[in-house]
Image (cartoon, rainbow, N blue to C red; front, side):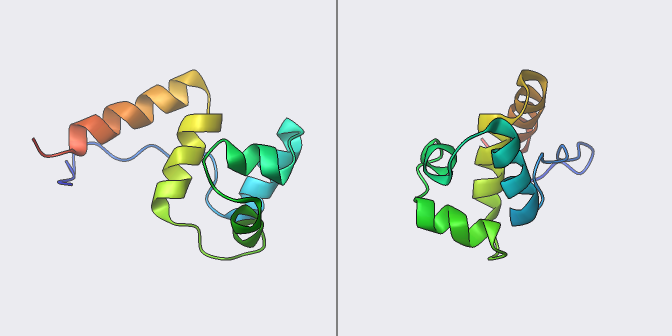
Amino acid sequence: MVIDKKKRMPKLICKNGSETRTLRRKLGLSQSEFWGALQVTQSGGSRYESGRDMPEQVGLLLHLAFGTEKQSRELLEWLRGTSSR
């Protein structure tokens, strides 16, 4: 992936596991429901929520799945603009 330095990546809705846990609870979802939407196991999601480093790809999926339509669109536009073709 070639990143266009003129366009910055949008700020993701969750920077770490603690913020992700807060979001999940705010949405009223169990770990299985929340993480299952991303094809992440409940136990894997629990590890992220407990402080294990979350891969960047998981953060991107969280943003797309649980961000607002505007937030998701901005991230998709950024991703499309940074991919080399």
